[in-house]
Amino acid sequence: MDKENTMVTSRQHSSFQKPQGSLRQILHNQFPEIPQARLPGGFDRVGDIGVVGITPEAEPFESEIGAYILKQNANMRVVAKRAGEYEGEFRIRPLEVIAGEQRLTTVHRENEVVLHLDLAQVYYSVRSSHERRRLAALVLPGERICVLCSGVGPFPLVISRHSEASEVIGIEKNPVAHGYALKNLRANRRLRNVRFYEGDVLEVLPQLEPGFDRILIVLPYGGERLLPAALQALRPGGSLHFYDMQAKGCHTATLAKVKAASLALGRDILVQQVVRCGNCGPSVQRVCLDGVC
Ligand SMILES: C[S@@+](CC[C@H](N)C(=O)[O-])C[C@H]1O[C@@H](n2cnc3c(N)ncnc32)[C@H](O)[C@@H]1O
Image 1 (cartoon, rainbow, N blue to C red):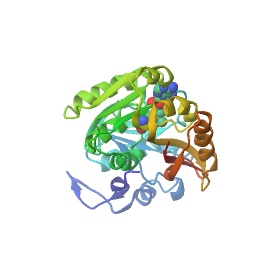
Image 2: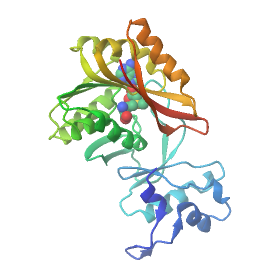
Image 3: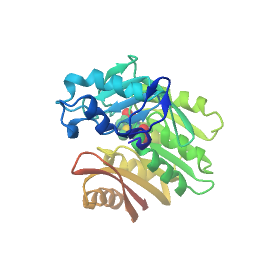
């Protein structure tokens, strides 16, 4: 959630004076017929796109709500609503533009890297930006790192930008996301130690030189099927970061997946921590298991 944008300040934009209060309160003043709790409390900001949740009660007013959010945010050009959950192999979330320009392409900046992307065709979540910075901070000088399921490249680029890794590789199956990753590498031309490969991890990873110091599996639904290939490519004593979805407050299933895969290969895993890195609905959370294997 882009906190900065959930609060409205009294700064002036041309002739429009911003009212004070939370977005939900302000919208309720404009649309009193909608219960306050059913109005958007904020939005995710991806480049110049604001992404909001619209409840069924607010739907009849969605274009006015979108236009109002646009008016209040000087550099925003598009407001889109979430029109479903992340879906399919490429984990794309259906979005519908409700105000502004009819596009879902944008340029976003996070953790001092530039990312071109098209939310209609690729996965990208601003909510993982802290997690990417956390990962980058764990990297030791000289490490060789592989990011499985790298999307438009945020993990490899942020790790490269904020560490002294010797090499950071990303593997991604969605050809559109891979195309953006290459574009993003060109856009961040100072980052010279990153390489992106297009294809299925299970086909591409075994062709790369093994012995990685650190491997990330960024596929929270079904990433366990990549564990055997990941562990084979990891040097003994290397670091594994495995993303998973878990019932809130419970990590046993995640631990069991990683333990089973390492035992099957005759390797032991020392679990360092399981970090909570996002909520997906009221009862499910996104976690990252950090371990040495
Ligand atoms: C949750 S997204 C994460 C993307 C990126 N790491 C990020 O943080 O923005 C998972 C990505 O895995 C890709 N993917 C799914 N199965 C794959 C596979 N077998 N091999 C390579 N990429 C895969 C999807 O296309 C999607 O881009």
